[in-house]
Image 1 (cartoon, helix red, strand yellow):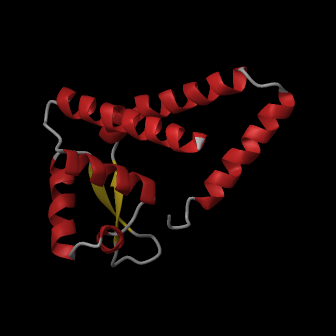
Image 2 (cartoon, one colour):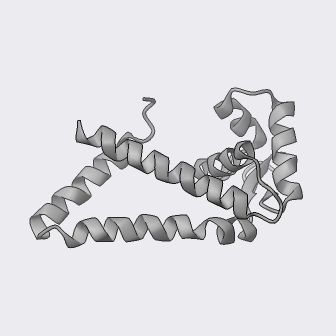
Amino acid sequence: MKFGGIYKAIKLNIYRNMFKKIKDQEEQLTSTEYFCLEIIYLMDKPTISQFADFLDISSPNATYKVKSLIKKGLVEKQKSKKDGREYLLVPTQKYFELFQNSKVAEETNLNKVKKNLDKTESKKFDKILKILDEMQNEEI
């Protein structure tokens, strides 16, 4: 299956970039912290409880991990507008400066693919991406 090869290449590229970022960091970022940052970003402002539930870890363990990221200036807690008792985990500007190259690379790669497609193929490609995007919430 061709998708398996693409998926493998994407994951390997992500991990290579992750370790490059970890190595290049002034304040060494552990691989666990990197994954936690990515999860917080991808979950789009989770609470500590949601973060802990997603990782299937205890709240104290999640709090410990988050405090480390806050101390490094990569995440901050913002009071929820819906429920003032809750705090949301939000990546900081420092996070976005560190990880912005990933977004640029993603867009560049998609544009490279689209350059090799005619209009019909490009529309089909967009449809496939939309289907994959809709599937993202399903557990694999």
